[in-house]
Length: 355
Ligand code: KG4
Ligand code: ZN
Image (cartoon, rainbow, N blue to C red):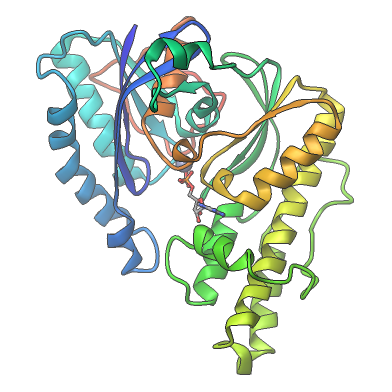
């Protein structure tokens, strides 16, 4: 089954063409237009600007990669939420129009479920399709997924395809949001995660002892707003050092270490309780090297498999949305009415749509 997938929940306009092959989803085309440079001027994503750019880009991108009459495409998948409503609406309305005009099934997908399914993507790279598929090992279920993005930080138990339970989440800021806010305080620009992470590599993680909230609680919830405030107070009481490069690097390293500590400790605690066969990492913050390395180390100590996602698929893309839809296709009630589907900014990773 060939799927056309569309993603426009935030500041990336993305389309992909994919086909499920056994336990992997083979990516035939994957195009992402990142609006980051435009939003950087404003210090963050401006929803109306994002929506406008999606409108400008989405049809030319489709026209370039997809047969104009929809030939060969069996279903259309689209991110229906969560995300920025004006941005989501562009992808959703485009998908509805194509599904209606081409008379194809329309599959709405949660952005968070998509991030998890990035771990099932098979890319050709330099290899032939057959070799890529032979070399692919799908994650074994049940899996515990740490989803860390700009808007969400959640621990999800995935017992089977389509069977998700959120067992913990941040009670305030998302991990990526904390990275972006600290970058903002240090005037590093947007998006902050990669910038903070690059400086952290040259800093001393023991320089500042930032708080690790909720580690003693007997649950899998997290909190990052106290950590962010603590960084703010440290910057205020060291305002003579704000232009000092080593000071910035030490702040970044100490902050990153605190975030990684919380994420890894909560994930390991959940892994011990739920005994998954695999631990998965998903979302934009999954590109963070410190997190990937620490998590790999700690998960392997438990004798559980850890497969870090390909960096290219950690950031927002449509391939992951298509992968989620490819597995949803085995289930009932997965399609939406192309005349009435609406965006749902509160969509959970385990919500399904009734047709
Ligand atoms: O998943 P994503 O592309 O968009 C959302 O669904 O939110 O995640 C974007 C987030 C941003 O907050 C960005 O700063 C963060 O991921 N991020 C990182 C890194 N790369 C991206 N955070 C920490 N370290 C990184 N290397
Ligand atoms: Zn995302």
